[in-house]
Amino acid sequence: MIDEFRTESWVGIGWAALGDMNRLQSRADFTEAVAQSYPSMKLGQRASSAGQSFRFVREIALGDDVITYDRGERTYVVGEVAGEYEHRGAGSGEYPNIRRVRWQGTVTRDALSVAARNSLGAISTLFLIPPSVAEEIVRLLTSGSVAAELSSKPEEPEAAAEVADLYRDVQSQGFEFIKDKVNALDWNEMQELVAGLLRAMGYKTRISPSGSDRGKDIVASPDGLGFEDPRIVVEVKHRTATMSAPEIRSFLGGRHDHDKGLYVSTGGFTKDARYEAERGRIPITLMDLDDLVRALLEHYEKMDVEMQRLIPLRKVYWPA
Image 1 (cartoon, rainbow, N blue to C red):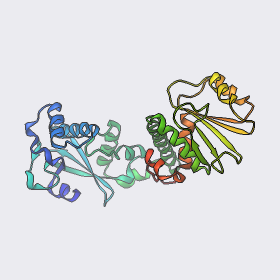
Image 2: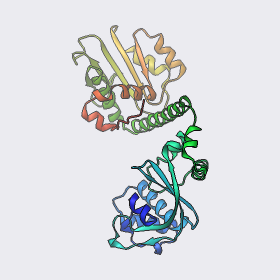
Image 3: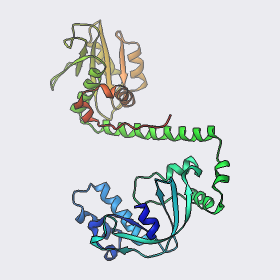
Image 4: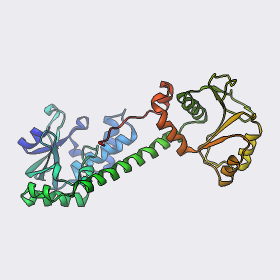
């Protein structure tokens, strides 16, 4: 809609099913209207939709600054809100809810700092820009010399370092969200996930039936029967409690001399448990939630479809 925004001097949002929002006053009114108009919408989406529409209609004031992006020109168009909320009617297209705007100028994306560019990439239709970024945009808008601003930008190594820091931040957040997904599995799903991970690593697996498993949940081996080495015996504990040394000793006590052990505990392990594993008579690997997710990410593309559906992940490309 950037051409219409610029030539007709307005900005708009969707949520056409809400109709004329002049009738809505409080945030609760907007929340209820969204719930009635979009019954299939998830609770989180409802809250976001209600918040954005409330802000557009009731919070934005005359004289406030507004910015929108022209992807074709790679410029941010900056203006001032010049009108109260208007509803253009049901036949006005996808964006019937508008505010009149007096455009003041543009700022090229290339002139902005890495931090500013990142903050302007929110997925919400409408969001509040951080004060420091707003100040940077106003400064660029009033400088009157884009070339001068571009020449005064940080040197490339500094900008590259900022991008690298941003990547690490996104990577860290993604890792924590994946941990949340894995931790939300029930016990049977967790057992299936661990077995699926071992299959992705080239082993065939047998999962013990429900009930007493005599210290093992999964047996993995090249032949799937446990006759060929290595024979890996796996115990899966999906609980908040931290596994201690006695649990590790109990697990080790039922193993054969040529077995290899894998003990998975989403609650982690005590220091004594790790010491017990190190001095065990057979090789044993302790895998906490972080270890499990790292292994999952390493072998995810080789996992079977059922396991990928259990923890659906989306690949994100990042400039090197």
